[in-house]
Structure formats: C-alpha cells, structure tokens
Amino acid sequence: MSTNGNGPGASKMTSSLKENLLDRMRNTHQSSERNRMARSEREMPPPARRQQARFEDLPEYKQVMTQKFASEQLGIANPFYRAHQTAAGATTVIDGRKLINFASYDYLGLNRHAEVLARARDTIGTFGISASASRLVAGERPVHVALEEKIASFYGVDAAVCFVSGYLTNVAAISCLMGPKDLVVHDEFIHNSALAGVKLSGATRRLFKHNDVADLEHVLRTVAGDYRRIMVIVEGIYSMDGDVADLPALLKLRAEYGFWLMVDEAHSLGVLGKTGRGLAEHFGVDPHEIDIWMGTLSKTTSSCGGYIAGSEALVEVLKASAGGFVYSVGLAPVLAAAATTSLEVLEREPTRTAALRRNGALFLKLAKEAGLDTGLSSGFSVVPVLVGDSLRAVQLSNDLLAEGVNALPIIHPAVPEGLARLRFFITSDHTEEQIRRTVTLTAERLADLTARNFGLGGIDIDQMMKALSAR
Image (cartoon, rainbow, N blue to C red; front, side, top):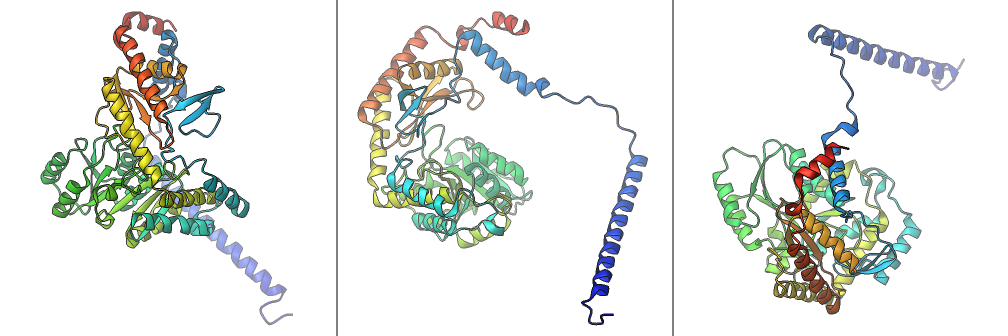
C-alpha cells in the first residue's frame, strides 16, 4: 500500500471528498430552494392563468404596420434601409446607379484611403478578424494600446479607452461613473445613447434648452438635493442641427458649479479646429479642462467603436468597472488598426479638414441663398434642411434619389412633428459641382411639393382611417 499520499488510495479519497462536498452543496441549495418556495406559497395566492402576449398584438408593432400601410396607400416609397453596393462617401451606388451621396459620416474621405486599407489587410493577416475575448481576460492586442495612445496624444490628454460601439461607450461610461445619488444635466437634444446611459445609472436627470448656457445655469442654480456627483453632457457638433456647443461659456459654469463636463465629439473630431482636433482646438481651450471626451470611431476615423479620453484615473476606473468594457469582447483588431491609421493620416494632412470646412460653408451659403431653412447649422459637417411635414420630407428624399442624390429624412418621432428635415452630411471629397447641383435640386423639389400641398395637410384623414379599419 502506498503511504506517500500520491497512490491509488489517495486518489480515491480525494474523489470521495469531492463527491461529499458536491452532495452537501446540492442538499443545501435544494433545502434553501424548498424553504423559499414554501414561504412564497404561504405568502402569495396561486397566480391567475394569463395569456401570453403575441408580438403581433403589441401596439408598437401595430404602429409600424400602420405607418407602412399609410405609405403604401399614398404611394410613398420607404427611404430607409437603402442598400449601398460600394463604400459610401461623397458618391455611392444604390440599385446599380451612381449617386451623389450626402448620407455618409466619412467626413474626411478616409474610408477608402490606400494606407488605411493596407494597414487593415496587414492586421487581418496577423490577428484575424475578432479579438475573441474580453480584453481583461484574453482579448488584449497591441493594436488596442496603440489606438488608445494615439487618441490620447491627438487630444493632448493623459489616456483613453476604447469600446466596441459608440452607443455602448455612452451607455457604459455614464452608468459606470454615475449612480442613484447623482445628477446628470444634459442638452435637450443629446443623443439617445447618453439618455440610455443616464437611465441605466439611476441618476436624477435634468435637461436644459438646446445649446442655451443661460438655461443650463438656471437649472444648476435651482437644483434641489444633495448630490454626490454632477455631470453635464453636451455635443461638440449636434448631429440633428449642426450647431456647435459654446465651450468657453460651459467652462465658466464648470468653474463656478463644480460639475464634470462630458463632451460628445462623434461629429466634431476631425471636423472642428485647424488640424481637426475638435472642440477644444476650435475655441483654443486646454483639453485638460474638459473632464470627459467621448467620441465614435465610425466617422472621421473610418472604423467602428467608441472612446473615452481624459485623465489616467478616469480611464483606469472605466477599464476596471465599466460593464461595457469588462464584460464585452475587445474591439476587433482590424478596426483598431484602421482608426489609428486614419488619425495618422489626419495628422499629416490637415488640409482634409480645411476642405471639409470649405464645402460645409459653401453648402450652407448656397442653401440660404436658395431660401432653404437650414435651422441652427454652423455649416461644418452637418447641414439640415427643415421641411416641417414628415411625409413631405420623405417624399423629398425620394424625389432627390430619382434625380441622383442620396439624402435621408429625419421624421417624427425622432424629431417633433413640424420639424422634419433632410440631413446633409458634408465630406471633404464633395465637389463644388455636386454641392451646387444638390442645393438647386433640393430647392426645386421642395418648392414643387409645397405648391402641391403634399404632406399630412393634404391627406383625407377620414378616408385613410376607413381604409385602415377595413384591413
């Protein structure tokens, strides 16, 4: 018989101990579960038999189908989900037709840049497509660190951290930093992802009038409650209206009221500032004065994902505690490499930002001269043309498509009824001829729709409701 603790006898004893332990764990769990169920049965009456809801019966589904039916009755084609058959930039191809395209976030024309594509191919050859795990566990790659160091350097701050989705970046960061004892104050037109992050955090939420720093001060001055932390969220360039946040005024309030300032630069990185470094460069402000820089990788940097940049401490907290980072697969290596290369090209070629600025200013100038309502736009990367009526906006988009221009409508409920619009995303690659032709066509087609009273005002509601009820 073996006596050294490593023979067959020892192995049997170890196996027996494991079985005994598992049995005790199961018995404890089962006993606890039986006790819980017994208490529940004593405390609660038997549940009433309920009918399982069908998705077809949901009011949300019925609303979607009603909208589809109304469009069919009016002969209005659905402008959404148009399938592009090539990389979309200043031009695109849809249904085999080459179109002038104003529905792309490729602001600096880097999506098909030879250097970006070459780096992407090399990275795929080395790392494949996916990181295949959370970065915390086994998904860390050198390209992740390189991208985060490049973002921090580009902004002139201490550190950065990247997430697999721009939407997730706001959700994860806000819900990580804020909690039920905190307050978030945001612009009324802030992106939905920020609203989702605030909701998940459980923080108290207040809004201020769009881009109105005086109203923000009023909110801060009248806030009641002893909040642990306060965060104010704005966008660098607002994606719906194309206007720019008043950063100097915001920083004055930050100094007085002591809140964290978070700036969403999804549409302003690469667009604002002489070298495209965003809102801080645009106003000549030290980027360290902003607590949280947030942005997406899917626009200027021709990739996909999002980032937070700021202090080393901020980044360490997010990497350790933000669920969207800790429990999510790491950013695909090829996407990280493409974004890094795009920033390198931008650093070498700031003329791309200058070209974008010229094109945006030209589009805004011509649109105003043509009598189009461009709302609050400052004429950088986003220029809306306000139409008012949702149906009219959809038909205007379809009419422009027929003429060779792709521009998408924003309609109710994304914006209030009466504020429907077409959004034109400008790129550095658009030509003057493309811009002039597009503005002229937009003005002509909108004038025709207005003259015909095309839209909700021209619909026989009673007849439409009869048709709907007869389905």
